[in-house]
Image (cartoon, helix red, strand yellow):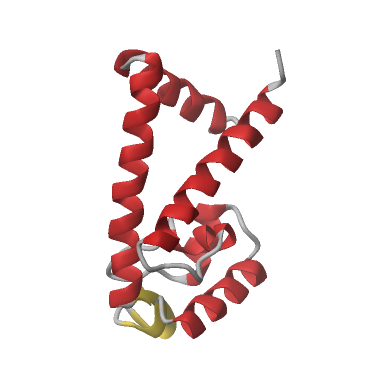
Length: 137
């Protein structure tokens, strides 16, 4: 049996391939898996870049580059943080919010299909165990 790293890599690769192919079909053809470091962690009301870095586990410079890309693509804008005018929030645009809605729908469909393969209870347990293991790193 392959080790957990190989299994995780296969799961992530297949998941991202399907997710981003389906997002492209839904009108988001310019997004790439790397953009998930921002789009998967951003709140609809906005999130500081430092929080996106912490949540995604990506270096601040990487997140900054991704925000620049997403801003050029029309998915996010930078706005002053009302709680601290010196700070900026990364806020999804209407296009970004549509992507978030579409991604949530697609992910639900993928997870429902996977649950149908192994059974809903086993899939729920798998996610719980996977989350528990992931938190050890």
